[in-house]
Length: 109
Image (cartoon, rainbow, N blue to C red; front, top):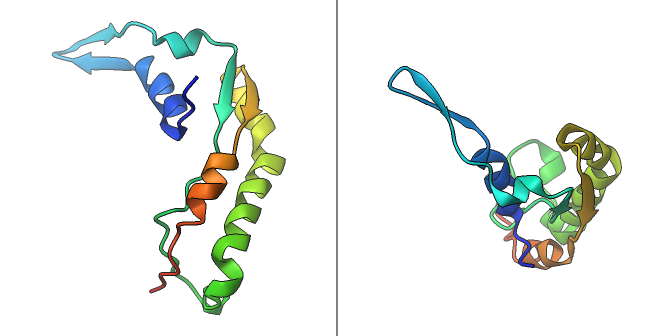
């Protein structure tokens, strides 16, 4: 099974009702919507740009340590909410995203 961060988004969007020419037409359900399980791949920070106060002026502290910590925080605080909202079991597979986040550049404005 190929696991991509956009799979969930595409699956959810496939069930959205499209309104056109004054009439609502429901698109066919995407096969992923029939699954009882979704995969959480993590948050992608590979193209992040930091804006803010002095808290964001220490790139060696932020990259990659905080990126991994922010992903872990999301898992601790929100994954149960996602599971409830989707009414599906959520499995995690964040290793690939952690590797991708290592490519984030220390860019600040």
